[in-house]
Length: 92
Image 1 (cartoon, rainbow, N blue to C red):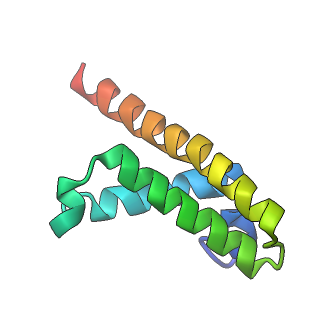
Image 2 (image 1 turned 30 degrees about the vertical axis):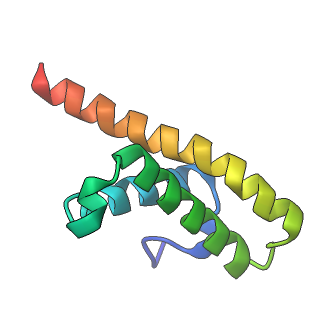
């Protein structure tokens, strides 16, 4: 593996979840994003990542775009759940 992420990797559940978790944590305390609920920001990041990955892999159609809206919920919740699991483990 020569790259950390590829567009094909980002189009997968695991790749999108990892990227969303990292991007969300990176921008969590920045300006107006800090005033936004983290779950909403995480969903927006999920949607952007999935739409971009679908576009750059050549599969963006109206149907796949609508599926990205739904899949972004799953990716966002998985990313938030992974972060909650890691932080809950540390605090015990």
